[in-house]
Image (cartoon, rainbow, N blue to C red; front, side, top):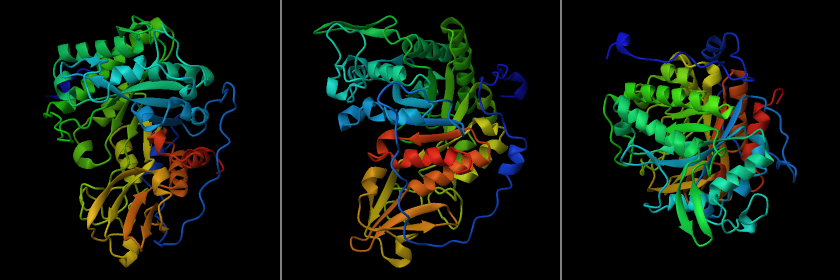
Length: 465
């Protein structure tokens, strides 16, 4: 398709109160000082525990350093992690992304229990007991909105500055975005369901649940997590070359419909997207054009190495700088490099939100040479949240050139790649110093009970830290 045949909407005006693009941000970002020589040493102590929000309603002002986006997994309650568990964290966040909303094989947004996760039950039908509720009050019989959605509504009441966004992830984006008609149908269904709050009505023991407008006001925008346009991705996702342009057109259609919904609702509605860090996937999206329609882009600056290489070599999965990392299976990658690339592709620095993982990857049967770094492995371990990795035996070592840490236990010959308080704080400081749009976290359930990582993120985004 030629450039002349492409359709595009005019750029959306910058949001009131948004941080301005720093003068010369591109030049500054492309001229980052070289890293210090590599060294390894035992880990410093983690950041102190957060103070958290008060017991009442948060009156947190706009946070310094841009957006602080945290993904909340919809399946969290099944693992013992509830919306109430981010009540204290909410004072340090600007956006909570609820992951995920469903897009069906028909190419429309749906709320359905026709899947192993029982999404509709979890989202708005499950009666939440007082012990799990944000405000300590149990859901009542006859209440039209229950489950996670009602808890998110309560969370917003306690933290009026907070915006909650529905994140859409699906294997069916390629088909849904294929034509102007299919795009319009997808967008219309998503806006009606999640922004208008028109949930399917069902009959539970206490009476009707859901219905028109039942979830109105819960969500303040939409996030697209298409993994990945015009690329195989994982899980058998369908893809085609036309995805590259169709993703841009889909974002434009979402922006058009959300602008109309904004005028009716009298409030701003966000549009964001999660985007890849590496060139093979990044080359298949029109990043600069996506940014014209998006409020910001969440750069998934992690998964540079992991269990898809079960025999190793071990490496960092979310290093800030290149250093001496190898990332053999995915090419040499770093968070800094990914941020640079998006700015170079025409994304304003203020719209680049840098992703930080609250989880790690492990390998076992790793020889002790180099304290396990860049070594072969016997097998990979499943991904684990930071709170788990932090409790594992072993020493934490620092790769200062790469801005990364790892843990190695010589007794069990186990290696973990992860972010700790020091690397999270360094990434947040990098974002602040280079005028980027903020930091995104996948996912909030990975932090420990003290909020060590979120506290470090907050400190790094503050001036003078």
